[in-house]
Image (cartoon, rainbow, N blue to C red):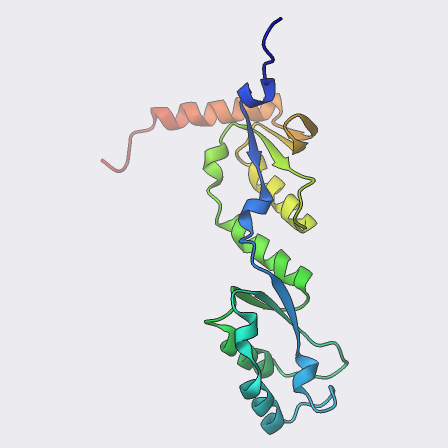
Length: 189
């Protein structure tokens, strides 16, 4: 009997797992309505006292989404004041829902990825994970990978859905630009 060979593990497929861009810290929504008079009116003195008396330590290492569940008109400085209290406590702070916060987090995280390490690679953007990655993160990752990868798929390496493949014309253009770059003198010398 021949040994079982894991062809996926031996392939050149790279897995890009968006869940790796999340630190695992909890997400909490902080409802600013609790700092308002009857949840509707912001009176500066009462608001500042409520902010001063709040137990900010309960949000240590949390990603905090600041929301307002009522129809109150909340001035920008109120969000700024709360954010300043969370600056050295929370993992991150955003105005909006927890989904807005996650979307902002993934947008920033994807902007800081070194995409060049996926140059000419076959990449599977891992899906079906345990954490809720915002759909927009998959779109941004696809956009970034299209600039460098040879092929993009979604799912798991053993069971993936093809998303995009560099066309023959794009391959030829890439080879031509690499050839031209190789012939140019190095300006740094």
